[in-house]
Every structure is written in structure tokens, then in C-alpha cells.
Length: 111
Figure 1 (tube, one colour):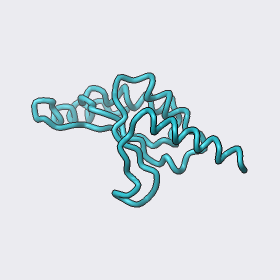
Figure 2 (tube, helix red, strand yellow; figure 1 turned 90 degrees about the horizontal axis):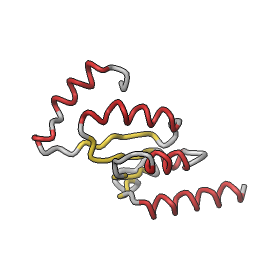
Figure 3 (tube, helix red, strand yellow; figure 1 turned 180 degrees about the horizontal axis):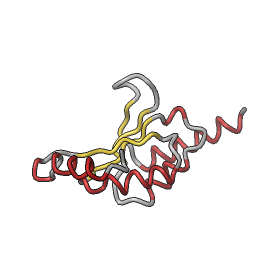
């Protein structure tokens, strides 16, 4: 839990940068932007390497994902866009996010 500081400190000790482990924080893209920001702030002490946005296919609105990416120093690592692993897991980048947002906007306006 992002609100359990004792557990977060214990986790940070287990995921020390000296171990050479990449720590990627998974965030559901359907989560409110303010909650995603709060979660990132809580977990940044574990030495985050990047962000993974899950459930991109379940979102009504993808702009919070863009905002979270833009407002944080952590790179986007991956997106998930369905239930099939590894088929629905893809490397993330800004251009791909823009494409997903544009396609999602088009699909929403076609309804």
C-alpha cells in the first residue's frame, strides 16, 4: 500500500540500487491521475527505474497517463493493452502513447 510507510521502507531495503535490480511501478491506467501521482510519490523511495501502465484497453480517457508521464522524472517502460501476456505487453514511448491517445479519441468520437 502506498500509505504503509513501514512496509515501503522495508521494500526499499530489499530493492536497493546496489543489487542492480530495475524497479518498475505498475499503475492501472484507469486509476485517477491524483491517485497515480500519490502512488508514485510513495514508491519513489524504492528507486524506481520506470512506470508500467496497465489496462490501457479499459480506459475511457488516456490523458491522465500522458499527464503522469509528463509530470514525473520516471520513464514509461511498458503498456499493457489486453489480457494476453506477452502479446498485449509493449514497450512504451511518447510517440506510441500519442498514437494510443489519438486512436482512442477517434474511436470515442465514432460512437
